[in-house]
Amino acid sequence: MVSGYDDESHCYQSPSLALKLGHSLNKICEIIQCRALMSEDKELISSTETFKKLYSSKWSEMISHTALVTLNEAKFNKPSTLPFTQDVQSLHQLLEKTADTAFQKLQETASPQSYAELAKATLTRIIVFNRRRAGEVSKMPLKAFNERDGTSLHEDVAMGLSKFEQKLCSHFSRVEIRGKRGRKVAVLLSPDMVDALMLLVSRRGTCGVLDSNTFLFARPNCQSYNRGQDSLRVYARECGAQNPEFLRSTHLRKHVATLSQILNLKNNELDQVADFLGHDIRVHRDYYRLPEATTQLAKISKLLLAMEKGCLPNLQGKSLDDIEIEDEINMTDSDDSDPEES
Image 1: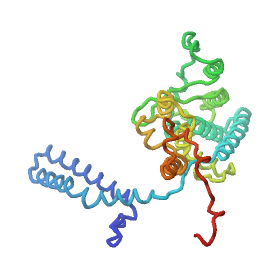
Image 2: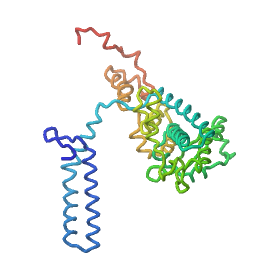
Image 3: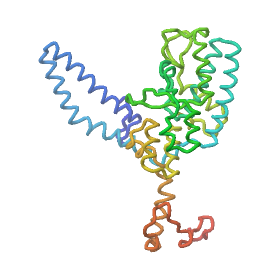
Image 4: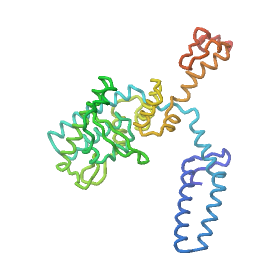
């Protein structure tokens, strides 16, 4: 079978392929059924209805259930893929240096090569800074950038913000673009990012970007755009990161969403983070939590130890974060234990 089903282990080598084949077969059946209805082919209509009945009753039992089990079991005992803060800083530093060099080069010599260098560096900087999906930023329309909101902060709104927050509002520019499932998402731009984008826009004609290309990060002499994921992968390798494979837009998004929990954000603040990332709040809470292993080792284990030692009554009214049991429980390392006891 194309998905690599093993009769002995009852597992798929490519479980996701088996699931996708099921969706494709169902879609093909619907297309054929529509054509049969339009041509009034009763025999074909009957055949498609029979297939749909078989699909709905047997596909889940015989294919998708096993594929989902295989897919879920592959995630067991899988190490965390969150990027290290030091790696992210190294990437930021490389991008800033590369963008500055490319900016000066494009100012001095307008060529498709210098244009592409600045476009890729700026695109990647925006993706990393905003923790935005690479495809969303890559497809940013030129019109969205040109029509960005440049109005000053409303005085009544400013009264509810701190001085630092007011400065941030005047420092950053905000562009609204289309996100996943048509959701409106925001992209924040620092002044140097705006300067780089303004230079790119002003050099479009001289660097061979077609007038019909509507993308902000357009590629010269074609109708397509620069792919942020490709650029991010290249810069991740070049920045000297310890784990460059974790410096991807998906991992970076999970990084900020997960670490935001360390701040113990309120519900409305967590909603704001989820909204900025373009997440449904349910998805944000279900899939971007602290790593399950960390939660169980650092928090749930405290509760279990307290119950085991009978000191739970002393911890009434406390949250998991407030529980401190080092003084009440004798913590010993495995290295200090007697070898004969092991």
